[in-house]
Image 1 (cartoon, rainbow, N blue to C red):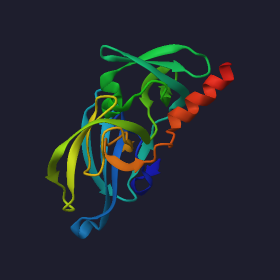
Image 2 (tube, rainbow, N blue to C red):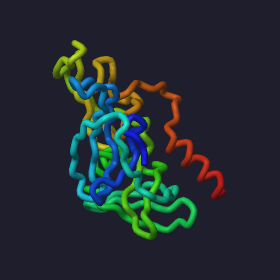
Image 3 (cartoon, rainbow, N blue to C red):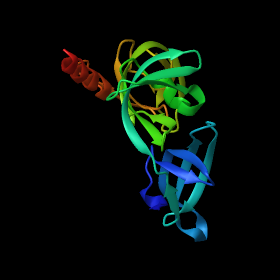
Length: 206
C-alpha cells in the first residue's frame, strides 16, 4: 500500500479491481476542515477513461503487482502500435486506447517498458518525458493563467501542444508524456533517452 502523499506520475494502482495509471498529482491542496489533501488524476489502462480524486494525504492505495520488460517502439498499424521486447526480440502490439495520450509521443526506436500482470500485457509505459522535434508552429493563440502568451505547435509525431512564443520550427523540446505539456526547450545536441538507448543497441548488434 502506498500513501496518497507518496504517489507520483506513472504509478499504476489497483482501484476497485481496475488498473489505473496516475497521470497527475497535486499535493498540499487545502480543503477546509479536512486540511491538506492530495488531488490525483487517474487513467484506466484498459479503457482509457479518466477520473479525478481528492484524498487525505495518508489515504492508502494498492499498488498493482506488475513486471516491467524493456521494449522498443517499432511502428503504427492502424489503431495498434507494434513493439519489440529488447531481450527476446519478440514483437507484440498494443491498442491505442490502452496507451492513452502517450500514443501521441511515440517515435521509432523509443525505449519503453511493457507492463505485465503475470503473462498478460497490461499497457506500455513511456519515459516520463521525452525530447522531440517541433514540425510546425502557429501564430500566437492565447494567454495562459500566468499572463504568458502561447502558440500551438505540431510535433514530428503529429501531436499538437502549446508552446512559448520563442519556440520555432525545428526546435527540440522536452514534453511530459503523461500530460502532454511542454516542459522546456533543449539544445540541438541534446539526446533523448530513447536516442541514447537506440545508439547503444545498434552498437551491440554490430
